[in-house]
Image (cartoon, rainbow, N blue to C red; front, side):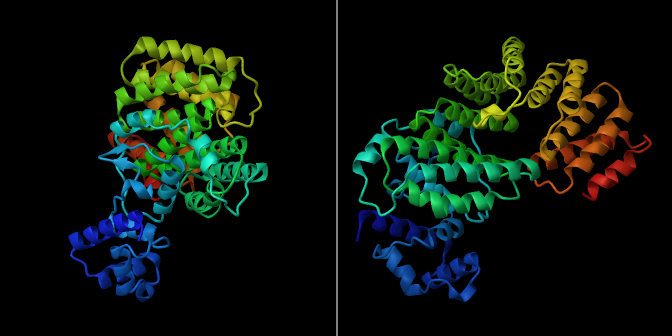
Length: 436
């Protein structure tokens, strides 16, 4: 009986007792969660887990779900301690997070404290130590496996960008659990290990973005924090900055203004050594946005100008990296909304038109969000007819997209329409939105 299994067994027993369940009842609840009903674990099997005689490897995600478990640090299970990420083996922690992400019934809260604590997480000796202490695994990992992770991330990311994060996140999580798990725990050289960590950081970031786009902000925050740790341990500054940007954008969306500024500053600092102007513009416009939301006009305008300078000297073609896909059209959208935040609605509308008409946006989700924002900006300029036209286009474009950001835009639009009931065409638009 290992100390690890014993500790996990004690947590399971305590959580079951707290719920007032028998061991048989816990088995039935696990069977229902898995979808097999009475075919769940029997009482004697649960008893062996609680005594520490057996480890519930297959059933662990379902145990976490039905008992709301907080696992001990030795298992690498819960990446939080009183709302903060705790140091430990990043690979063990991210794989435990992936295993626990199986049709979760509860959404997790995202806190500014967790996001800021993530800045101190990376263990920069992790790869060297794992290379030195690797067991004689039968799984040998080389460049081919690293390429596979990157190609899969790109394919799943393309689908999510088109149709929203709600469509394929379970595929990302399954791939992390079924394939990447084996490779991270396989045998590799230090050079391959760094590339594998970097590729996994991209996959984990995608899982975070998808969870955020579904509305599960706490789970997204955990994925972003793990992506940052993996990227930092791989010594990849661009991926580290991109993960920090994910945390910063989330903090902006949730209204954690001070944390958003701090995370955006860390993102820009991380990227100072990069030479890619697209990447620099990507991170600088995020800091500008955070500063504008925080009421700091000086910092907002400074970094907006810096990002414009970088995006204007960047190559139009996307590169291989995440940040190099930040096009001038996407920059125009972000900068337009910053200008709207600063009260310059005329310039904001020009930028949004630039994003839509001059450069176009190749993803339906992105285009839908810009159209929703354009309607709001036009309304603030008392152009009601223009707002209604933009919102009709928005509903056309957003059909079939599963994204909390799109759903929030629909609700925001309907709240604004309620003040315009007497205007011709408003009732028709609201009915379309209600039937969506």
